[in-house]
Image (cartoon, rainbow, N blue to C red; front, top):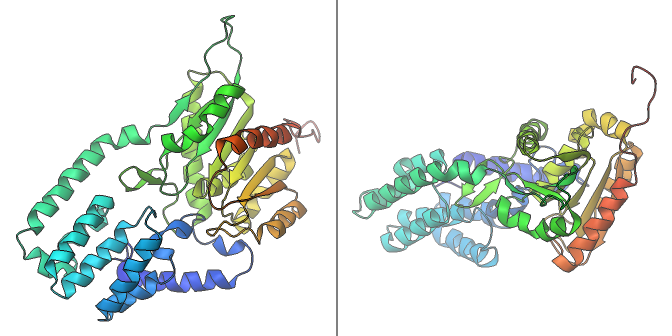
Length: 385
């Protein structure tokens, strides 16, 4: 049984981490986990951990009932495949081979075993022993290997940034254009997410750059931050990938270096926050939607962001169930006391982008607010200190 990459031991560790996080007020509880991922993971849904523990402890029926209820309520979670894998394990433990194979096939269809560790799990998990002895298992495993080979072949293309560039002016003398860098949420795909912003860029004369997270969790579903761990280290690595995508774009497009902005949703907003605070020398500002933020992990970056006076606009749904809005006003005020320039806009709705009718004017207004701050930091002397 594989509740996560590390098995049941990892599951118990997650349960402890989640309990500790819920006991810490405000947003600082997210510092030790990659903000944005766990909140939209099927493994973080109420009752999931307990259900898997029941299956592991021999109460398969109760565990399966709970998992089936969770699947009915949260059927769009990007890593739903791991729930179906655990249903397959439960049925296999009870020697119910037909429903076990059906659940395992569904898990594979949704993305289970794209990761090498999960693929190896198919061949060694003791809970699946009854399935491996069945003639249906070998074709299923062969199908997984074919799928993974095809995915590996097309992965470089799927990871390549999606871009859009304004056509040159009629005068034939192109001027540098502003750029909006768009960061998709956990389980998103860079082009489909970026198209939410494409009409705005076309109307406003912005170029658009949408890099992709490099961890494919399921076919067509990507993540920036690989679960818990050192948020600063992981975000630095992903920020470098965004920077390299920008440098590649600039080889063929004249980008206005004073007008480079970041937007993102969920996990992409978390990364966008770190990107904007850490790199004010080239990020003019950010408009971030429905993110979880890790302010205490950014202590060593705050002085640079304060020096540049960069502005970051947070836009959040009042009814966001993944990242409740209640702690945000205090977080914004605390950040302002450290010298960061944040503003919070609360909208009706949950964890999503506003519709295009609301999104476009909101972006224009927030970007104008960002542009109202000086592009360059005030000079403090010839040596810049």
